[in-house]
Image 1 (cartoon, rainbow, N blue to C red):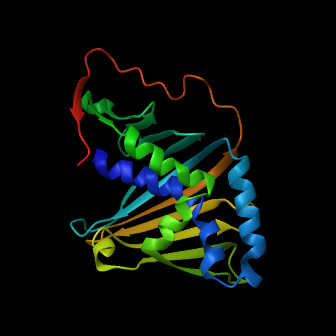
Image 2: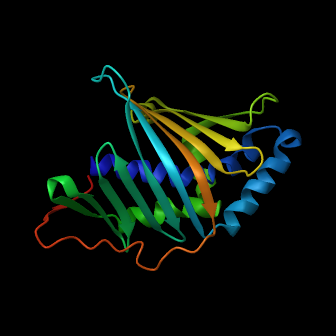
Length: 226
């Protein structure tokens, strides 16, 4: 579960920078202004807070699994996912470590992610990572007049990439230029969608927000990314 959540956190953060890549593969006459505003937003964003709803569609489940909670990001590389329902779970990335805490199980898992973290969070800067994304995905940009959001569809260029990520879809609000929805489908067909509401940009975040104090009775497992 922790390894999958690390990938989820990475994808959601990267989604904020993905629109900038569209300028290289789509008609600049129709996208220039969108790209410009998205990039300006990225550069000015230091904190991001939002409520979220997560919906997972799994082959083994008869109906989608729905969770909700709060998401907090602080530049350059602090991320906090707080799941409130149906089960309480906290996933924190800070200081090169990812800690997933399950209070109802009195259990926590820790993974060192520093060497991956620097690579992931550079997407926030809309810089060199763009060329890297273009290597692996084809982009389709749509702007329907009857919809409140621009839509980006990302499809893998190779079968090897498709074995891990089959499809990514991103919705960008036309007024705020923020990512309001984000969906990815894994190679096995399992899909996860996030919808963000009550989004707050550059509002103060408490200094202890990214400090997770575990009770002394919590069992902590040290894990490794493979």
